[in-house]
Length: 328
Image (tube, rainbow, N blue to C red; front, side):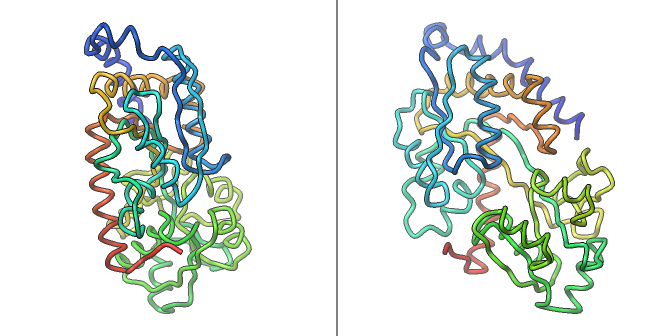
């Protein structure tokens, strides 16, 4: 995983001279000439807010203008991103989002205030957050195979917690039920924190959660990690197998963060922002912090992020339609 991240960051850094050449001289001279605003459509203090502020500090150094992070929570991220969609496509207003508001909400919201594929343009997937399948140690379950076997033998006796209906942890749990052929009861909470607290207390037994939330509890023995729901192991928990290694290869989930802009952003500005992001994420103070949390730096291009968004939207859209999942 480290080699891949280094390769992505190295390629991003090597591309910077090319990015400068791609900018028309007039655009490069003028942008940015004033502060850039990044809207986080979530409350302060969460993982998206934290990483966005790290990115903002890095971009301030790279671009030479202040990057201001503003929190606009509400309606599962729709409030903040609708403000981004209504903004001028000049590169000075951007949106920083988790997966839900871009790839899940369009399939479950009664009325969307924006179309993520028409009113917004992808700038870059910033990071990926590996999801970990964890259980309370009092279950006695120590492997993913044991979880599947127990759940099959005891349908409906295990509860899995999530951050709320239609959140990625909820959909990840439903995906696991489907691909593993098991039955568990979903218990939604208002946020990952309360769900984690009840998992630690044994009120729920299972959870699919980002590594940044559960890693310390796994290391301390308060939770048992069963598998990484991704294509490779993570360096911070090297003994934890992937779901493929553990016998459930179709269980693949990542709760990623990405940057978007209003539709109509000129290609030169889009390319310049992407390469600025790649260089900002390669700064030691940013990269080391992201690595320490167990997240993966991606810094993909607009085209790569756009293709990824389409794939994610198709996956989650099919699942929520099949299961009839709705927002509270």
